[in-house]
Amino acid sequence: MESSKIIVKVLSQFLIILVLFQGCAVYQPSQITLDQAVASRNKIKVTTRDYGVNIFHHIEKRDGAYFGFKSAHKDQVYLIKEDGLTIVELKDKRKSNLKALGVITVTVYGTIYAYKKLSKL
Image 1 (cartoon, rainbow, N blue to C red):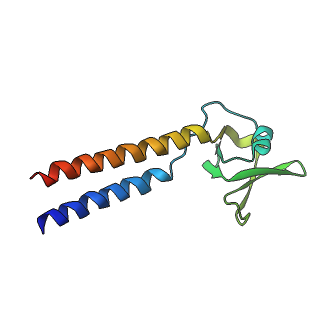
Image 2: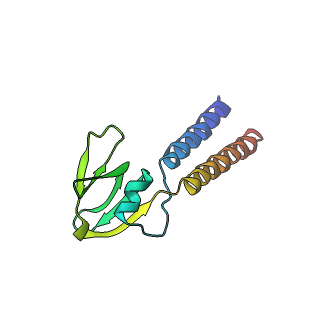
């Protein structure tokens, strides 16, 4: 009975860590222009003086104005004013994937190690 509680506790901690780190994204440290962000059709982090940090699924340019889309379904659209911009960063897919893979690997090995240690008790 006691060992089953330990197994459930270790597995639940594994799943919590896995879920928490799956949503993390790494952004390139170099800044880009809004035109480059439009061309990339990639996830973008925009920092403004007025509204702080916003993460957009992609950015489009229409009639000289920039619009940020929070989701792929285009249901949440925000006007991006160029005069209030401070930083525009592009998501780094390679680093994000490596980070997720590293977290998963460390979590799996940590869970296996903890299970072996606790099963000896």
